[in-house]
Image (cartoon, rainbow over all chains, first blue to last red; front, side):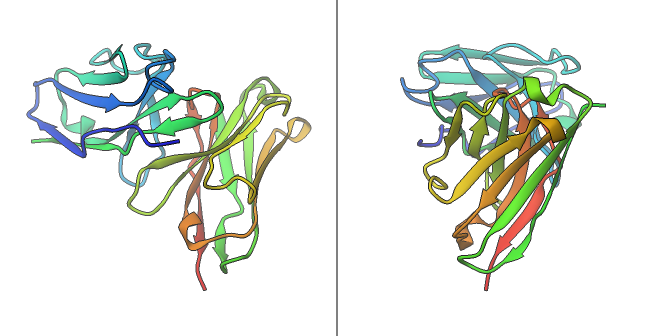
Length: 109
Length: 115
């Protein structure tokens, strides 16, 4: 049950695109198409942004997209907006457990 | 409105016990698996435990196995987490979340383990 690896921080200017990577192993990210991404603003509960690798829940902006290649999943946010500034966590099913990434702080410059 | 509301958090001494509850509303609780996820102060999210809709399948993180017990009462639309032998490192906000994709979260309840 080792944590998935995410960059500690990323930044971008309004209107730009950023990508957050999430690296796991062949026991989690690489074995299942069950990676999800969560957005968390300070003091708030996490919010599901992407599930099953690339699907968006109803109400989530199409500026958010997800993908996967091998043992690495990615979250891309296009057309950055001030309200996108938050912590982002990836998460993967891993058989009889679920594993999160360490989180990435997104700063909108 | 689909909602999850946690309760039962508080201050407990090391070695003590606490029982968390999560009240569900706005959806058919008995149709969904449920999870507990925690977040230590200033740290990331950590999956704690999950339970299937009929309680047939139960899983725990290695960090809590043997100390925590997840359960549910579908008649009461409620999820529980019995926490025993608590340690300082269990200090966190505990969230309940719906389904394996964690698509609905509660607001969390704070558990502080300290002497």
